[in-house]
Length: 72
Image (tube, rainbow, N blue to C red; front, side, top):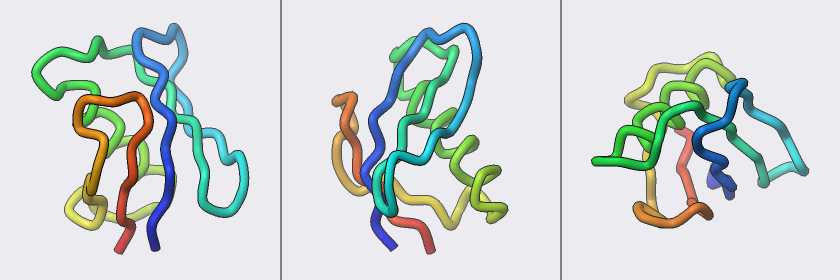
């Protein structure tokens, strides 16, 4: 399944919010430096879907706030 994710960095509270069936807003407190925010987004999505981190793959948007992830 592919999902669209809008990432909000440097948030006070981390969360995963479902907008519709394939769109999510993920808030992380990590700054977007050296891919650390992307790593944290993967961790939060894995927790949200109750799967391993290796089952969450970033397909596009490595340096953008709008990303596409594949959930296996």
